Image 1: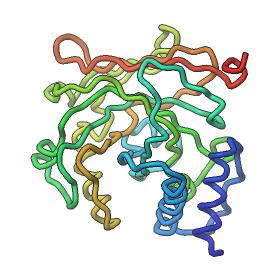
Image 2 (image 1 turned 90 degrees about the vertical axis):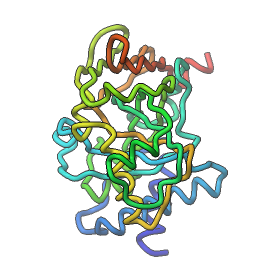
Image 3 (image 1 turned 30 degrees about the vertical axis):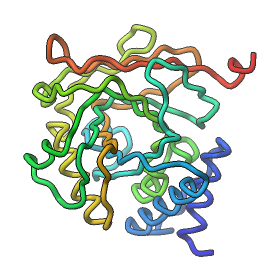
Image 4 (image 1 turned 60 degrees about the vertical axis):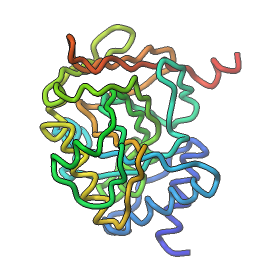
Length: 264
């Protein structure tokens, strides 16, 4: 078994068993190999019955780059098993050391199979929604290199998507407010997502084309975190609101519980 398959198996098993592993040593693999590991890990999930649902972009905001100590845009893949219910209860027993960040999610209306211009990107989008992404590095103490996080599917673990709308006009600089139990924990703007979240669709099209992949109609594109992430603990009510007034995208929310609470 080569490094690609070995690393994919290690990370996939760590996610399924909710256990952290040591980061790979420096130079264990390069960035191109890291994406091969990512795809091999996702293939294992598909073989177990999961279905592809889309793509997520990472490190699209300066705050996120600073928090994670990297300076490159990265991307990962989404499956149906990652989707949690809007307004539902999230079992933290499924995760290792989860964090949450506010995002914007797009729903595609057409196949994306080549690089897009900004105008073409807008025409490929059916709807937009406020979203929350649950990130959960499989590495010990949430420490990793750029290559390591890419191999680990860019820490993608779960997502909650709010109600879809066609309110695209206010996306460029909409206020973003994430609250725990009604208390602000992160406040920012969608402008932190590449200056305009729709640019994430353009970037996604280029990244997919470079990897020889396409995105079917009806797929999700998670545009990237608008603020830094916050650690999750059991017993929280988490809400993200994007925009205000008539042009607001609305809100998305979930509560957290532990595996012990579920069995009690």
